[in-house]
Length: 322
Image (cartoon, rainbow, N blue to C red):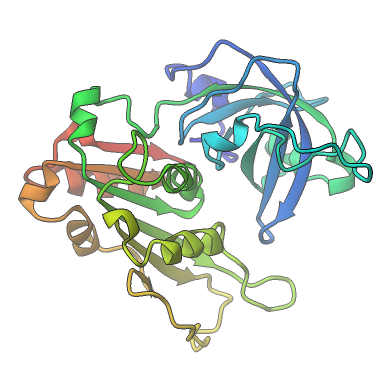
């Protein structure tokens, strides 16, 4: 998992992970401020290079200008956005150099960490880094489909559980979007049952207003689209919301009605939430679980999950961020 606070260099810490051999070139072409701690970047791929192929959940070893240290950042977009689409009819109003909807890209979520040189570079003022050239290599073993299962074993999976804490949502977002775009009954697409458990803390911005949480609206949109159980997919999304100390205890809840397959809990994830998500002992035999978050949370959840009867260890995958 890409980190920004770990004292061990990303390349050293992930040295045992699988990596692609090719180095890709891209340009920073879009910057979106999510909240005071996180921004989203789109890296538009140069055209004169080999096509980029990556799996949902993988990261990049990122080389940015004037920084010797290599940064590690998880790809939050699905593989489909990195594929070149047929070019539309040329426009007389769009400059040839401007990125258009068909330009292939990858998206990264960058957490603010000024003591980490690559992250600090990417947290400069947008006009200072827009259109900057970058290079990267694809790596990572935390993928969907998983590397721990053979193709026949993966084809038996009909229940997928995705558990994320904080920016541990990054690889999970790539997986969910990729599944949704593929639809059901396709390799790497939606299983017949999917459960997403996402926990994060909400803080206040400089004006005392509640900040947006990374990907909360994107996940709501996908869950709402899947609420009707189209393609016979049982899609459930639960957001576990906690608050930082500077948030008043009596803050009002969002009373906006939500589909039945979506809910918000104002607490942390509990063991019983995990048990409900993975299902009965029989159902666990065809269940695949991903856990991504802080080390303590990840270790605790993985220990609980692996102790559940019917859930084989190789079907419980985890990745940690620091």
